[in-house]
Length: 450
Ligand SMILES: Nc1nc2c(ncn2[C@@H]2O[C@H](COP(=O)(O)OP(=O)(O)OP(=O)(O)O)[C@@H](O)[C@H]2O)c(=O)[nH]1
Ligand SMILES: [Mg+2]
Image 1: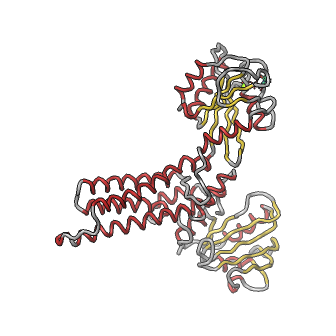
Image 2: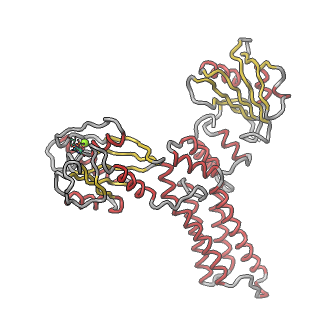
Image 3: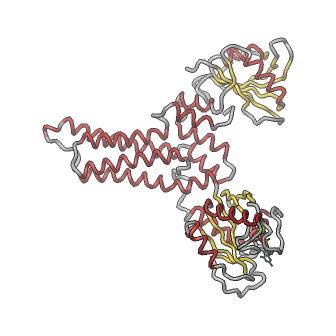
C-alpha cells in the first residue's frame, strides 16, 4: 500500500457546470469527513454510494454544497479507497477545497498519471491498458479513439498473454527434456519444436506489421503539398479546410512560409503542409521558403505532387522529389481541370481546387496511401505504441536466436534461455516486468488527475 493519500482535480481547469476532485489512498474518507457535513460520515458510507452535503473550510467557512461518491478498496479505479467530490464548476471552489485537503498530514497533490499508476501497481489494469487510458484522453479523431479503445479493451493484452503462454509451455518442455537428458527422452522432435517457434514468430510479425497502421491512427499522417509555383497548392489547402486559410493569388511565389493545418478525413487525422512553390529564385525570402519546402517533403508520410493543366509536366521537379522521398509516398495530382479538360499530362488523380471536382477521389487516394487496404477490423489487436513495438522486436530477435539454436542442435539450455527471454520481452508490454524508470517515463506524460 502507498503511504500518501493523493488529491487532484479530475475535470478540465476553468469554469463549467460541474468540477470533480478525486482523492485516493488510506486517508481518503477521514480527510473528507474533516470538512464534509452530510447525513452520514463518509467513513461509514457503503461503497458505490453518493452523498449530498456541505463542504466547510477548517475555519468554518461554507465553501460549496457538494456530492461525494464513495468507492471502497479494492473496488475502485486505483484499487484504494477513493472519493470523488463534485462541486459547482468554478476554479475558486475547487482550489479552496483542494487547499483544505492538502493542509492535512499525509495528503498531497497527485503527480501526473498517479491515479492510473496506482491502478497499475494494484493490479487493477495492466500496463498496456494504462497507456491506453492516456491515449484515449488524447485521441483527437475517431480512428485514434478506436485504436485506444481497442487497446483499453485488452485486445493487445490478451494477444500478448496468449503468445506468452505458448512460450512458457514450450520452454517448460525444453527444460523438462533437459532433466531427462541422460535417458535420451524427447518430447518434441526438432522440426516440431521449430514449427511451434515459427508459429509464434508469425503472430509477432502480424503485430509488428500493424504498427505502421497503428502509428497513423494514433499520431496522424503528415502530408506535404508541393509543386511549381501557382499550380494551386494553397487553393487546395483552402478547399479542404473549407476556409480561406492561405493567401491565394495569380502571382507565382505567393506562399513563403510553411502553413500547417489539421483535418480529419473519415476519422483519420491528416496534417497538411502547404509549401512554397519550388522554382529557381533570386529572392532571399522565397529561396528560404523553397529550402523549407524540400525539408517538408523529406519529413512527410505522403507527398502530394501538384501540377496544373496550364503549365507543363515539371518532370525535373518530379525526379527531384523521387530522390528526396520514397517514390511510394508520392501522389501525382493534376489541378485546374476545369480550365482544360483534355489535358494529356499523366497523373494519379485529376481535380479542380476551384470547383471541387475530383476531390473525393483525391481523399480516397490519400486514405489508401495512409492505411493501405483495410485489413484492420475492430477485433484485431493493433500496436499503436513505440514501446510495445520495441518489446515485440526484442522478443522476435530472441525467437530467431532460439530457432538457430534448434537448427544447430545446441543444448536445450540455450534454447530454453532464448525462449525465456522472448517471453520476458512480451511480459514487458503488459508490465509484468518493468523498471521504475520505464514506469515513471510512461506516467509522466499523463495529465494530472488521471
Ligand atoms: N481555374 C482554376 N484556377 C485555380 C485552381 N486552383 C488554383 N487556381 C488559381 O491559380 C492561382 C494560383 O493558386 P495558388 O493556390 O495561390 O497556387 P500555389 O500553388 O499556392 O502558388 P504559390 O504559393 O505561389 O506556390 C490562383 O489565381 C488560383 O485562384 C483551379 O482548380 N481552377
Ligand atoms: Mg501557395
